[in-house]
Length: 273
Figure 1 (cartoon, rainbow, N blue to C red):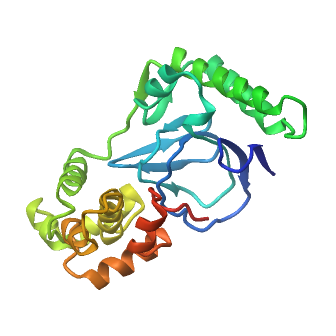
Figure 2 (tube, rainbow, N blue to C red; figure 1 turned 90 degrees about the vertical axis):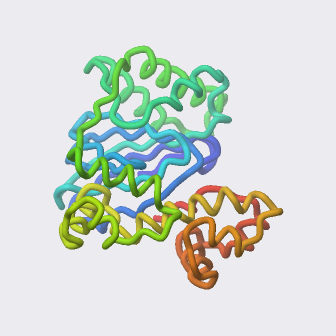
């Protein structure tokens, strides 16, 4: 059942989701708010920016805003998770926000503290927004939860996807605005195109082309906030050699044309479900 802690995603939203059977692949997205992801049952791979994190039951994952990510279901059977979204308006302590922004990935924290976080999540889920002092209450629960996490989390668990693949994804992240292709990257790292295609999909959840397009569109979104830069120039600087192709990909991934996006002055890829 879906519960809203204060409106939709403004500024706090929490949901407990159970899937009993095979589900469609999760869509990729970028959003402008923090995400705390608590896996209760099942196994999930979460690709974030340039690394894949392997979640097992009772793992807690943190994602700051503006991180390209995609959840990959490892097995098509029941899984359950609690997902909490909030933006910076929900947290009044700037030190907490700044510290939280340093965390990306699975949080390494004691089991007792995980139980405490889960209890606070359940309290948020059970809160009825019609109750008196609702906003103050959910804000206090969120603040307590974040303090528990930040006090007890000493390191982040980062599981390697393999040294060669990490070098490949780092290279792609540095070069996506250039005219790179699956073939050129495969040649550079002495692997076949078929093998590169397989390991790219396995480790990120994206095809090579999807990943390049998302990276380029995210870059273009930032440039579109500056009125003095023409859309044609943005297309070229983002790695597209064709303005029509740029417009088509931009619309497909964001729901806006580049001109509409600039006019509405929105940033971040529109979340889809």
